[in-house]
Length: 325
Image (cartoon, rainbow, N blue to C red; front, side, top):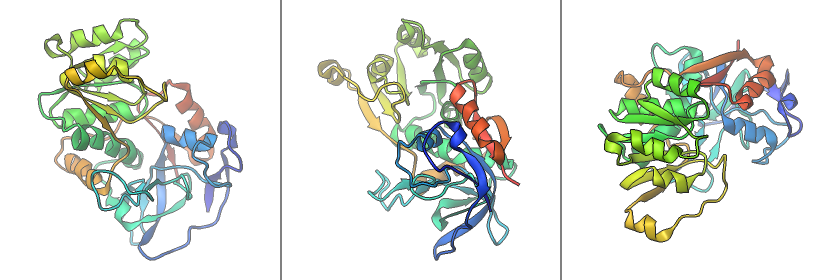
């Protein structure tokens, strides 16, 4: 089969199209013929060697395709979550980390990580749904218990997660606000459901964000995928919930204990999602409350390196997808 294979860690040029072995068949797993694979920032970190993936390696977490029985499916890239909804078990992993991923014509995944492709979704939209969709659903619904009428501030308006979080917030009847480095991305976010947004490059962005929150009191929930916990807490109303799921700008955070507990804040960590979260996400789709994910651009499988450069440029808004014949 054709696959993108990296023999070393490095920049986008290490992603090369070549022939690779067909995944072995095993009990409890299904071999899926892929028609599309969506990119995530996680794939960039895999490519750079952050997760120590075995080499040579085929990256890719998100994908959609057909089973040997002809069923159209979407892949949940959250493998071996376990039986507890509260947190994954120790052997949990993301597809494309320790085992070959979706940048290929075929991939093998556990049966419980497959779901029927949503009606009306294109292959690209189906492939783009799972990782950011289930991550946003778990963060906002399962962890933060976001409800209708509440407000949420999503840090970073571009990429794939922020549009997904905005869409999930709208699906449950909440009001989403965003931050971004450009006014254009804020305007695009508003076109796709965000109420408003601020430039995080402004020195007083937290004050600006609070001013646009309902009644100027701060947000019920802040979704922080960048690691700026101190600023995020200042954007919350008293008793608000800070949900953290990334550290792209800061690996460590310092919080002032006294103001934290007097503010009655909740600090919630989260990552990816369980099969239960995935079914919850698909339930919103089935009810017509969640629209297909926003697609920024599509590339052929052979152009994976160019697709990664698009992702790393920071210019994308929405998901970048590889199309696979």
